[in-house]
Amino acid sequence: MTAHVSIETVTALLQTYGADPDRWPPELRGPATARLAAQPALAALAAAECALDEDLAQWPAHASRLEARAALVALAQSTPQDIAPNHDVPAALPRNWRRGLVGAGGLVAAGLAVALVTTPADVPVPQTASAPATVVRVAAPTVLTDDDALQMVFSEVDSDEWL
Image 1 (tube, rainbow, N blue to C red):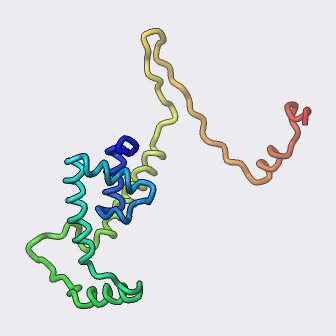
Image 2 (cartoon, rainbow, N blue to C red):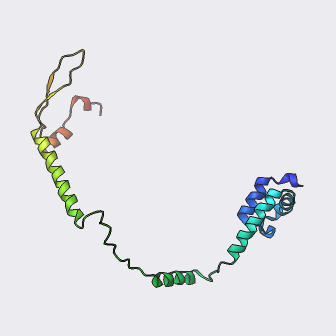
Image 3 (cartoon, one colour):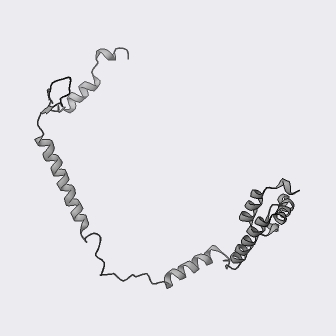
């Protein structure tokens, strides 16, 4: 009869339901109890689980969630909430770190604007072994008006004939 229940199954029963066989599923009680009696290693595990069951039984059970919540609130209110500042440890960030962050962001934006304005129109292309260095002229961006954009979107072109 012990061959029907593996050691892993008995271990899982002990860890899931505890050491009391009355809490185990009824169809596994007989074979698991027989396997437990035959294996000394399982008996040691059952003793450890029995000690855990006894520890858990000593915990007070709350009648309702409201009582548990009231007990938690009472504990929180009885615990001092204010922590005295430690003046020996310097602060990681200065008090007005946000102003510094905004100022640094402004400096980065100004630097990017200067870099975009002062970038030359002639950009050299890196020289490779097979081709001499060439210079590519970058065209200035075209600014479209609303009328130009509408005319581009709604004008017919040769590729639109299939529509």
